[in-house]
Length: 100
Image (cartoon, rainbow, N blue to C red; front, side, top):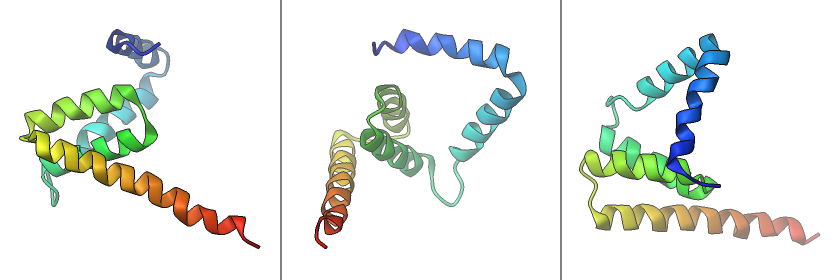
């Protein structure tokens, strides 16, 4: 099911919902522009979220962007560990709902 070539189908969204997709692409572009947070750190945050949501497309796209922005393998590894800690932490804290 996962194939990066599937992303070519995004053009169908652009064609069939042009105003909404134009707004989305503009927002996406602006969100990743360097500002108070530089491009590298924004990409590492995006990568951590992608790992947590388990979107293979986002993982690959933001991994590439992070590396292009200067991420090293140790930085990618730490990002993965932070994502794992966040996901595990949510399971642990939600376990409090088990006890009445």
